[in-house]
Length: 544
Image 1: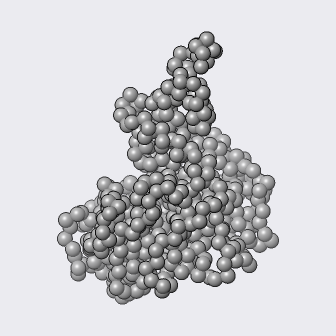
Image 2 (image 1 turned 90 degrees about the vertical axis):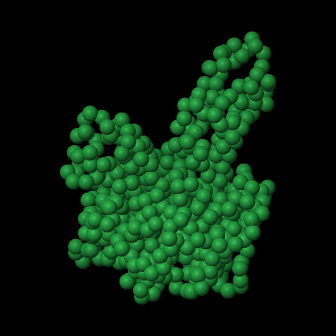
Image 3 (image 1 turned 135 degrees about the horizontal axis):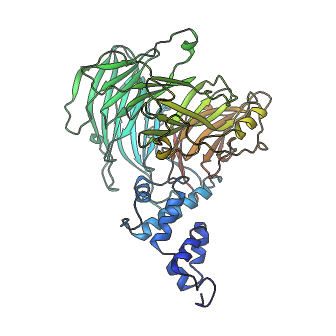
């Protein structure tokens, strides 16, 4: 670039400012033009600016997200690491909604017997944990080389396995510990009394490590007088949540490394009062439960309930009562009422000066998938809305309709309403606590691609929202058809209220064993994991 050119005469700061408005591919092309621009495009300031600019839309690993919170001068990570993270995130965003042309990777089958999948989840975009109702649990490292699953890296390898030696296991919950080096799992078995077992799984990064069943370390073996489902286990608070049709129990467990194994203990818990007050509430069963900061959030079929979390498990055995209840069709300008979710998929939560934010997707069998953004305001912030306890602000920001039960006019009304923009702490902690946080139009709509059948296009057999809530995947089975399609969604600068149909993979078979019943998502890498009714596992990589 000649020094006398208009661009060459500008100071470096202005050049960096101009380049920050370009997309990643344009910056990489600018790097090829001349030596001067090549040096500028390798500036740490430029790539940190691109990281800050895209962090609200693109999924990044936790380490990269921590870099975005640092000042430019305090970031000591090498430039190639930051640059490669931004480039990969931008390229995966471009290729995420495209069809997967590469054949899926099928994990090794242990035997020829058909087994029923109970649980499947992908952690840190690398560690795949899945279990069967027959009592087998497996941990795979699907990306040992830590490269995109496009055929260039090492093949997936099995790291650990466990055979519980009995059948009829009904539920499993798992969570990473604080170090991200271990996975804590809890399993329940349908029996009277019900058996509950808690294990720790060590994630081995050595690709040459020998497969060893001792990787599963038994922490507890508990007994419950009635059959219950485990909903969540949280190593940080050493709490586990169990539920039955009429109760939600919080159980104190010890997940420390050197914790003694209790082989004869009984569940000692604090109960949440979720008993139905009327006949209509009988049809509002528990779908999922989460511990979010100091609250227990119960996702029911028709509503969300918030309970206080009692940390002193020994002194308070009384039932905790609900502090806040919100129906899914809570807002006056939300035209779709009587939603009934059979399943939900929940993102991680973010806390900003006491305000808790998270998102979730709920599947209504008759209507489709609904994407919500939720914020919990503590009592000291929401005192103008609720005199007792927290306030829950719930907004539907996306709909994937599968039925003409949803009218287009209702969708248009939903698309043109005002939705809260991203809430900043200053909005909540302003001096005027009686005012509602600022709202601005956030969602746009395009109704042209809505196409549903006379009654219903099909049904969703599996659904998974990424931990950051920026990508999702679900499996739709067409009615009167042998086709199963995998659809994806990703967050954009301006999201459409009606989620477009973006199919990336399909399975066509007359065999019911090929029905896709489970799915998991690697939000950063773009990896999709599918499980069918026969218990087979398939990995769909992304073509960058």
